[in-house]
Image (cartoon, rainbow, N blue to C red; front, side, top):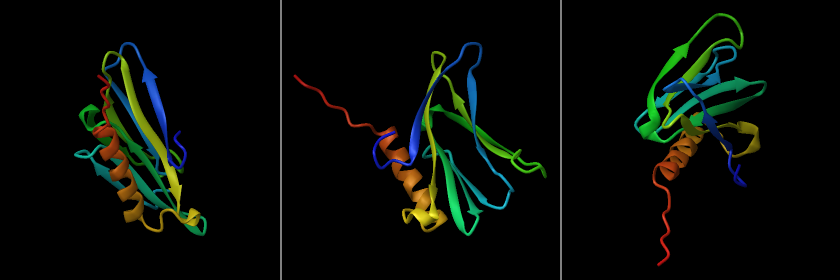
Length: 131
């Protein structure tokens, strides 16, 4: 994880599958999900104690094949799944959270803007060529 980042990098290698489902737990289903396939991110903003918490997944937009929201009445068994395409048996994605009380993300919009900005960076990496 880069200093100051709220998202950790995950690199997964699998055999025998074309798609990986990375999930965000919806806990008590008291929050709001946002799916932005065009930019490459998924979000869940929810009440947490006397504050609020945002969870998210960001992946290269060309690797996203869809999503599935699985909802049940049982606590901690509902999930928002990002369906990610494996290339040569591998996928890299980012996941993490932000807490309102940290002072970084006061609102769901601020959290989603962070995910959008992060997605823009991974979808447009800096390329350096030395000649």
